[in-house]
Length: 582
Image (cartoon, rainbow, N blue to C red; front, side):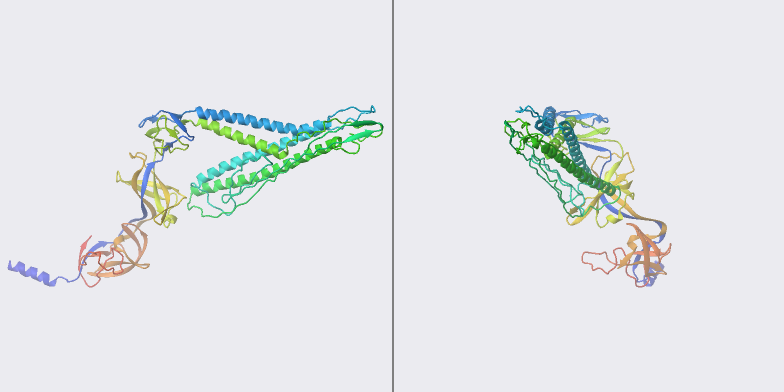
């Protein structure tokens, strides 16, 4: 006992008074640098079904848990009001076509009526009143056809450009990035006077144009004498032309386009280019239409001028300007006849037909859309409608946002918000892992989409990033939460140390090595930095002892003053000390 006591006393007398260290060893291994976040997980093959037309639900044909096939009916609306709309629109189209036919007839009738008049003569000589009626009518009919075709082209291309703009809004994530050019405007409603068109350009600002034309009329009366016989007659041929200015306009706008990359940006750009091409086509169409209006106006004026020799009330009042025994030949009541339609009015009538046809097509489509079908095969996850319930177009009825949800077999997706400061490090195709909170098991994933629309909350701006999970047999419900780790960098078979062993001052990195019982601060260069391990590219070799912590120092408290070392760095570099392996 005495010997033991002496030995213990000797040990205490000789043990170092230096600090105690927690040590580890630099080793060769793999390092991953990740961007971590949280995500919402949902099936990639999921259909949220809603009626694209408003109405009253007449039947719901499925229930939760039921399996449905592709194209199977799941619900339907009452079609009575939709069918009535179709009938009304069909009548509107018929009426518009009748008005156009009457307008065309009024123009061709001008030539016929003014040149086919007859009347008595007092000298037995007869003036036939002129020729070329058939030729003029044919020319006017041809010009009318050209004008109406040009108007139909304008209406068709404007409608297509509107559809392209809608597609661009979808491709660009709900909004069209602003540009330096004018905007896609909206088509003004048809006018009852003249004609009105606009040119829409690019995607911001506004642009409208309008024009008007007034149909003119002319009247005339005249009498004529020839020799001793007097023939009196008067006639009028109302003619007129109106002009309409095709309004054009430009708009300007500015804005910041959404940040993003990959196929989403490419699709947005392609959609905007399609809109721009359509707008250029509309501009050319309007130029063609204006030329057609001018050509028809000229033909009508020429016809009107030919008829004026019969009715303008000149000194002789005669057709053919005969002399001597030729008397004035012309009949008429002396009252003005109805003015023919102008080219601009014809264009408006055709525009109305096109508008009514578009309404009819929409009404027929709405009638078809009254039956809701499933686009995928799967299991009904929720049903948010009942018979007799009113729903609005696009879903979001008065009581629920998603009307019927069908989950199909296949992979899952996870969507996570990424801060704008970290977004440049994220790219399509990057590897990642998603760990569902319900299972705790990491699942490999890949970055497949980067959103264009930002969200700002409490001063932090983020963009949605979508990852597709590789596993297809996950037993999870839509909306499950999970942890996300996007791999930013990876290094294999490199010298590594625990990340907590590295301290940083400014841009300089240090580790504390333990050599011959002494701790020394050593400057190192680092490569890939992971949450657990950090790559050391120079300044340290594999197998070196590295200090993790000084066990002699008290644990930090809220009142502890920082020493300038990074959290986890080793301290207490004076003298030799005891150590333990971590």
